[in-house]
Image (cartoon, rainbow, N blue to C red; front, top):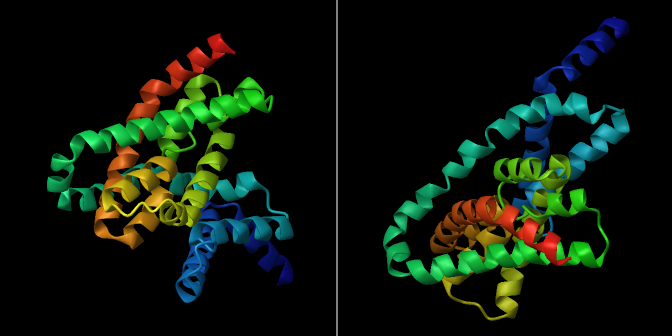
Length: 241
């Protein structure tokens, strides 16, 4: 019987259901913990990632086996991002009245984010593939992976950079806004969404409906700008440096 149980356990681990179930359970644990303590550093995604990593290391299950289920979750990232248009629709009049400053803020943030990565990569002597992989760090995962792939980067590194950027933005974004006394709800939402995409937007939604709507808008526009400007900036920095 123990042999049969071990066989069944091994068969279950090798199916996509294992990766999906583990991801959902780990995230739910992180969500419950966050709701109890309300500490920004204990972001549910961060806690979930730590749980999954520790479990895989402890059990010796390789990442490829786990990621059979992760691929299914990644497939739904795009549709999930579209849902963020709902709070934006509720604030459409606000968007119309402040369209120019909102677009200017998102554009400035996107360009600054990509340019700073390229400058710092040159300063620290990172190789070209790694530098390119970090450029789309502030957009959603589906867009970032495709940009990285087309520019010759490493999509796996890009995904890690996107997750880390999102978690840091969600944790410290509101704190930075308070430090610089940024009280305008539109400005706060645009800043968080442009810098830290969907993960930051989850925090912006907690701050208020206006912040969440503007952050959701920033995700889409920043993604489009990154698609068009990332190749150009990489090329220009290649010529200059």
